[in-house]
Length: 219
Image (cartoon, rainbow, N blue to C red):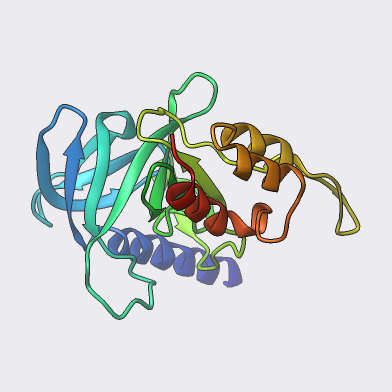
């Protein structure tokens, strides 16, 4: 009896999550310059798209997309209704995997974070018909915000400081000093500030670092 209740609740969660994540109308911007308006459900390696809520769902690979505009996180506490842009960029050594990012700051170097729409922990379970998997959103968002930087002419978002080594909350190796000073090497004063670990120029101050580069560093 208990197992039956668990299964029923799980099915309700799955149904509710799928509905919740496909109710907001969005505009898809493709890499070929075309666009399309409809309803989007974010999946692991693709989106499912419907022009109308009752129309058949179409699978669209992330690699075809440049960005998505208009979605609003159903769990968000935002008071405004301004459309938010989600940007699709390749990741991994072969560039065949893609991630969805939110733009935090725009400039000579753009600052991104993993999309708040897609960063809820997901449990991928076998679907009811044993074909493929179904995402179950746990409802708890990660507290860690991962930031990345990218110039307009770069294909990949660079995550800085992702190789730190820590023991008992003490950082043994600060990779942000190495990676950050290398990425911003075209600005000598910023490179020195990062490498020497000046206050306001560490990994946790990435917004200040990007602001400094965009406003005080000149080509």
